[in-house]
Figure 1: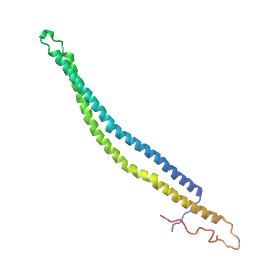
Figure 2: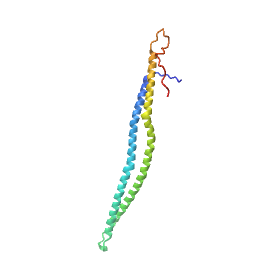
Figure 3: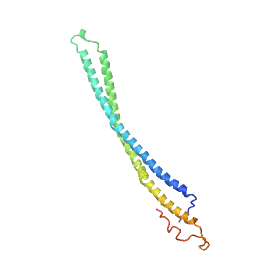
Figure 4: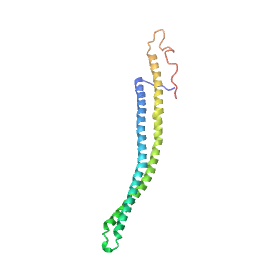
Length: 184
């Protein structure tokens, strides 16, 4: 059997209180982390792809309009009736560039969404372990420590009882705890 030299039961009580406070603090922090993971997954999995899908649609529409405008300017029946189409060509080129950029960003957003989802899933595993600790293991340790503290208080109370000269040096067996708490 192991021996211990407990000098201050109050410090153990503070430890127990600290363990319970830590479990509560962990629970709140873990909830905040779960919320942040959910937000990141939602943002990169839903909002960013939706944004670039919409931007791609707008760029396609803009390119179509620019091409129509250029075609109108270039399709005059007589050469003298044609208006300079330089600006219309620049507009078509800019619309093509924007459309290419939007399509590239849309592809990037899809691959980024997959990677972010994978990373979020990777975080949820250890987070579940920490949740197990904060919800179950730390409170169980505090309960066990509480039981040990109860035994220590009983032992300390029995050891401090005045001993009459007739009883000898040790306390009577009825004053001492009958058996120590189980070691789990």
